[in-house]
Length: 168
Image 1 (cartoon, rainbow, N blue to C red):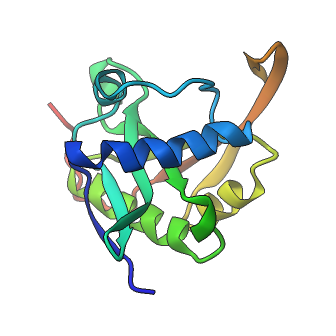
Image 2: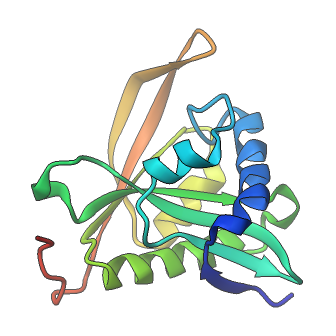
């Protein structure tokens, strides 16, 4: 199976949101419980570093970044969103997609990527750790979901690229 990675475009939204819905349905991929519309999703994600994984004209995964803060000092820090279609999980698509996201993030001046992962999402934890993320914390009862407290594991990856310049 040949997988290509390319920038996400607006026309990809219907396939992207279908994959996102699959993640929501697991209950272990995101705190979101409802599918956002394009405008809400688009305004919440950084405009660069949006990538889709495609095979035979089908989007099978996507990755994007969310700012962790609007403060200038955090302009090079972003949170990772990465989702893979259920039928393509276990085929290393997620790992390859995350590597692409790392490369693109560094090209665009990001020096730290972080991810908040539910402890039950073992595959996401493994993908992140296999791509240079390290566990930096355990956030107990950080949010409620359907009336239940949920914990997350906080992971981060610092760029090894010493050429990254601070964003203005």
